[in-house]
Length: 224
Length: 253
Image (cartoon, rainbow over all chains, first blue to last red; front, side, top):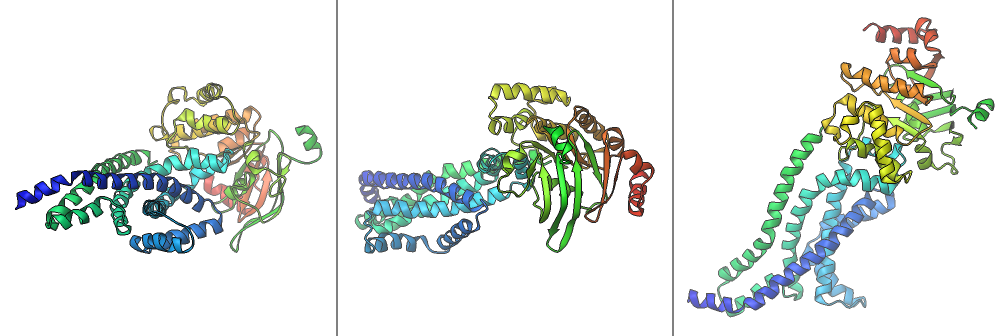
């Protein structure tokens, strides 16, 4: 019986690959966009304009303080009520990008604030413009702090992407739900689904760990 | 141009009735002080007397509450004054060096010339190497700050300022964070800069330096300028009890 189930599951590998592909594509697009937007928001938030900083801070808190499932439902079911038609994929990308941007914004803000004021003063004193100070002096130093948790955050976001199955996107998790209807062995099916996520995430976990070690060592060196 | 300004009684740096508060603390009290082009002024006084704040106001790291502060003919806080541009004319050397740790000595020196002055990279690097050689660090061009001693870092920091060819150099306790054996190598560089005719304000307790190159010593206490005179006058015949008390403390060692 186990053998038959395995065979049956093996037969659905094209579906499984499609699901894995959807998970990877959705995560990749959202993480790239979320990283760009997250850095932009983080830089704006530390930029000194109280209004902009306050608005971004409030939005980030709101997103961090509500379940992702609820956010995705709001985007997918409420926006069409307001006349904005979205397919499930677009809704999924928007929701996951927004989530990624908010978490990454927090990481970037922490990184920027970790750069000693003396560095900014030195850049200021030599006449660098606001953007030059950010680009040449602050960001390169903030990156040491930002990179390890950033990669760690990617892992969390890839796993969070499983929530998009709730609005009907055929990602890896939804493939699990579909297969389990034909092969009544939830343990086996979802073990394989979990394995799929793990295969995608594990290299990133290793990368985060290596970055942390390298940054730790490099940072010790820099201590004056 | 500069001589014109001097005739009009307008120095390179002009404080006129400047006041500053941190909260309710009056950190600069009615400061009036004029620094002429090519003049070297040493500012000393007990800690917390406002000397660092005084020079940090000149390049706008601190803002003043009232009074006028005119630097190189431009009034600070005036909407017509481009603070970023004015800062390119003012070198600032920090107590804690503040070199960029992710950049080599040469990159520290060339960053602002390349990005602010828009000097071509090869030209900026050539000038940067010459400056590092001038401060005695020709062999440390590619070293990172973490690989340099405190004295070497401070010399790179001075070269970094000189790279912008400033009209004014401000030094905020440049040797206070250094081990004793490294102080003279930094002071030697500062003397050389002074002898080339740079307008300088130096917050320091290095009285040997003051005697050697300063035209004037300004003594501050509790946010006010208490006394001002030639190094000889100040060290040999201090006029106030406060300056005598201060001198007896720093000269005892």
